[in-house]
Length: 196
Figure 1 (cartoon, rainbow, N blue to C red):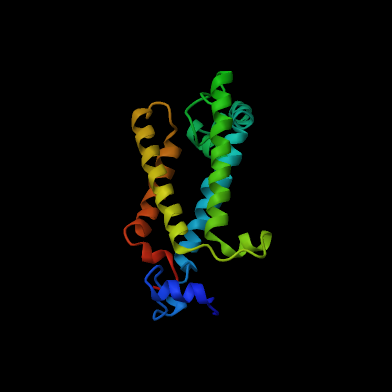
Figure 2: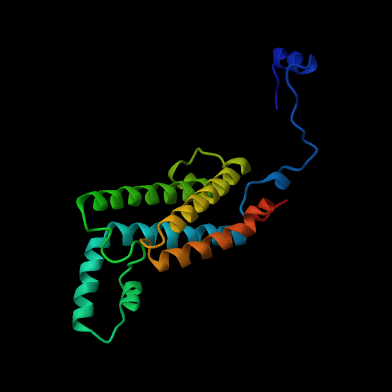
């Protein structure tokens, strides 16, 4: 790489430090390991995408579930909950009041934003498809993404503890499973990347 005379003098005078090029670039690559790629894909699809649609259409799904149970009394309500994506709050709490319905849509928006950020931060190929001149996202931003979602996990755990009589059991079990999977990467972030 060419350096201007001023930049060269600044480096020699200690104003800037030159990058350590002794480590091969591939060792510091932000390319994801296969296992982390699968984990992020799982979370984007089963948590963010399925979560978005089941929450956005929660009232419609609950209405369909109610009709289904009336026609099929042999099904238990918890079985029908799984069939109709009733994964969030117990009973009809999402739809009981206009305020609850509004808050449901707000959470749906956050799920969508979280999923988009997760995809565009972690999957460089997808981001570069939409923004061809973009570079690979650095490791640091991918690690920040992991820890941000981990902090969100614990915020969710606190909510589930304080509102355990409101939140559906599927939500509690699913969240616990997702948190358990994320811990594998939180305890050793090197597992996120292909080269270490």
